[in-house]
Image (cartoon, rainbow, N blue to C red; front, side, top):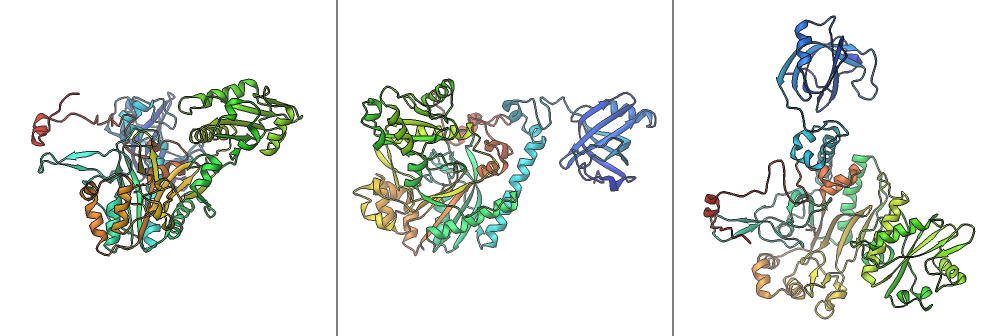
Length: 583
Ligand code: ASP
């Protein structure tokens, strides 16, 4: 080894030891007679000291040559520091330098390699290996590693076996586009990268493995956001001979174990709420339960006073913002602007401000008398001091807009602390979703999800009403995982494809292998997959999953460090018989 110790381990008890350290020069402070160097490695920072008076001249000369991020090897004696730094674990000591060897020089880094950096996102991604030297990002990768270890530890203790499934496969429908890979040996034919190992894990159940998991990379070609990457990691799981509650119990155990071992937090049992219920109470299938502010349905109390906008609306709903009864005009205007943003899509916002002194002000004064407004407040449990915010219109759009407003108010009122974790299971999802654009049903989860037994007879007549044995795990408004009990019989699977408007031929061509497997003793089975990167972000307390991925892609799906995607040579294209025809 080039070194005797790391930069993170020397303490006051090591004083007088002769040591050799290696690392990167974080900073040099040259005060003339004394020069200090902060030396950094993966384990921490240790201070080096060179004194002009007592050090040999060549040492003084070499230390003056050091620049940021030079890689050095240094030897010296551990001494007690005169002024101690209690912010770092090595802060009681420093190394009185005996020798310095420059192992490599460094160009001046394009941004500060410190906790707070002056580098923007683009620059940090282009030089990601430098960004990864920064403590917060480094810690994120350690957290990720811990999460991997704890996940494996727990699942292995529950007799799950980790099995790898192939990366070059055929399309698995999870609702995104496939990334495809051309096959040289089968000209004109393509593999698809897995959107998930869904069909393979089901086949593993048919094979009898009973409890499977995999920390697996998945690929989905869709538009990117802060919490999405074209390639991401899942904790993918499947079990045989189970019903929905067995799966929920097993994986509630995993999530509890993760929170306990990584954050020291004991989570209570997770509530299980139906899709219908969360939509009615919070307008979202991934409600943030860190705060209440539940929807109040106002149709019956508010209609019939001549205010057309409300009278003609399919749904009038509100939320009560406690303690906001004195919001200024500017503040309510600001909320109106919020709901009118195109991504929220409301035409306007109505409100009732109920001051603590009993006065009531409303945007609907023209149509509602004071006593009308008071009865609305009473109906909705809105007390003096509170603000009632009201949206109206089409059911789906209004619920969506109010759920966004609810989250916004939760943030404004600081009710969404990153230190509080409120998990829940959302169950009983609809099996199918009506796609307005394509005028057809699509699978809400995926086509292998089993309808509830009692709803199967509606599958072909009223598909929209069928509920699925499907569930999501939601924490703090983030969908962290989802799964279902699967169809394990060929006939039902065929019926499902039919409900999705997929012809027998197409179904056979795409998924014949799965339906064939169902004919060879497929056991009842079900499973779930968790978004591993999102789980890291939740545990780490930030919104962007990119911070937990060593080499992520940017919003256009590019890796700017290795500069890809990139063109390939004519020879390669020829070999694949691919011709690029410009659009
Ligand atoms: N394959 C599903 C997904 O990736 C999860 C599951 O149903 O187990 O979302």
